[in-house]
Amino acid sequence: MSMALKQVFNKDRTFRPKRKFEPGTQRFELHKKAQASLNAGLDLKQAVALPHGEDLNDWVAVHVVDFFNRINLIYGTISDSCTDQTCPVMSGGPKYEYRWQDEHKYKKPTAVPAPKYMSLLMDWIEVQINNEHIFPTNVGTPFPKTFMQVAKKILSRLFRVFVHVYIHHFDRVSQMGAEAHVNTCYKHFYYFVTEFNLTDHKELEPLKEMTSQMCH
Image (cartoon, rainbow, N blue to C red; front, side, top):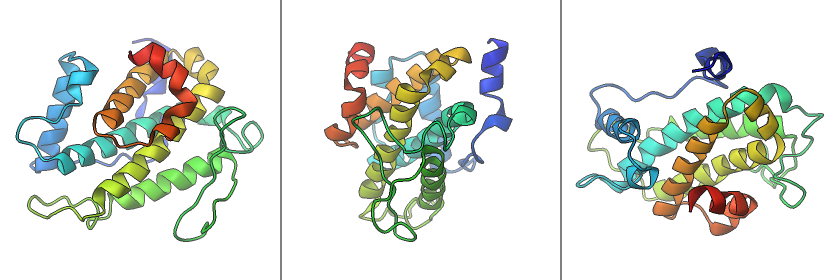
C-alpha cells in the first residue's frame, strides 16, 4: 500500500467514530460473513447476495452500518478540499442539487453548503443506527415495520455523497491514490442497493453513465 493510501485510511482521518458490532452478537457474525466474502475475492455481485437462511433485515442492517463507516471515511479523505467556498451548495454537477430536511431544525428542504450537508447527514445517520428501536442489537428483538423505509432513506442519502465526491472531488481522490478503493466501495454499494431495490432509480441518475461503464 502506498504511503498516500496509508494516510487516506489512517484511522485519524475518519470523519467521526465508527459504529462497531459487538462481538458475540448475531450482527457481528453476519458482519464477519460479509467481510469474508469480500476478502475471498468473491465477485461483488455475488458477495451482496443474501446468505442462505439469513434474515434480510439483518443483512441490510449490517450493510447500512458498514457503508456508513466506509463512506464516512471516503468523505473524510477529501473533506479538506470541500469547503463552504468551493461547494456553497450540496450538488452533483449543475443538474442536481440536494437540500437538507429532517424532523427537527430543517422541516422544509433547505439549501446548505456541502460540508454542512455532510455533517447533518452523518449526525442524522448516527442517530438512526444507534437507535435500538430502529436497529435492534439484541438477537430476537424484531425490527420495526418501518425499518426498510429508514434503511432506504439512509442509503439514498449516502449515495449522494458518492455523487458529490465523484463529480466535484475526484481529482483529490486520484491525487491521494485512493481511486481503486473508492471505485470498489462504490461498486459494492451499487450492487447491494440494486440487488434489494433499496434506492429509487432517479437517485442513481447522476452517476448513470459512469456506473454503466464500471458495473456492467
